Image (cartoon, rainbow over all chains, first blue to last red):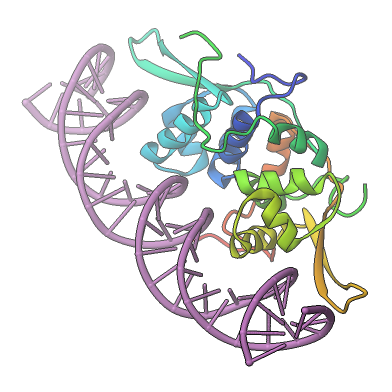
Length: 117
Length: 117
DNA sequence: AGGGGCCGTAAGGTTTTTCTTACACGGAAG
DNA sequence: CTTCCGTGTAAGAAAAACCTTACGGCCCCT
């Protein structure tokens, strides 16, 4: 559900989260979703980007836990995928970064479950 | 709380700061400098990276104001460049990002507005 | 001289990231 | 059946980031 906050996430996680946020499109996506959930096609229209592109960025954001999507069915039988932002609060200071640095494996990745499927 | 931010930086600035931090080397540099200032050659040895590489990353960090360097002369007449971190405190939440998004020019370079067409 | 410390930068190649175009699926309604 | 809505993915080009090697300079000491 959330990306950890008070306890502070590991260096690798922080690195990936920052990388995920360090992109204009993805920043906009998070910003847009912070106003309420939305489904892919509509979000693409709202943000003025192609579906495939949005899809890619959503994947990137979901991979680090910043957003989460759920497939749902409308009454009309349509399959729609809704996305919503996770609640997170990162405190970035020289000290918090120094702290994170101690659990930095570099090679990033090392994805590892933090949530169930 | 002066140099970098307090009133909240613009979307473009935030974007660049995040991009600057989203790198293992640069994260380590900030972390290392948070323990005190240091000069280039020594920092390179401490972090185990080449001088040219470190130089590049320092440039990137300095460009967004996360660190600052100053050339100094030792008693022996040696010219040494010391770097230190700026004090900053970023609060990253879906809301703060949504807010920053409103001043996001996207492909802008710390400059002025660019119209879309 | 030659060596050592420090500073910088240009050239070049590799690897990532980003983005477009094109395609495939399902269901509802004309 | 065709068209419009939604979903997803693959392939390849373009652009940006990253890193190394190699070179240039300055000053001091043996």
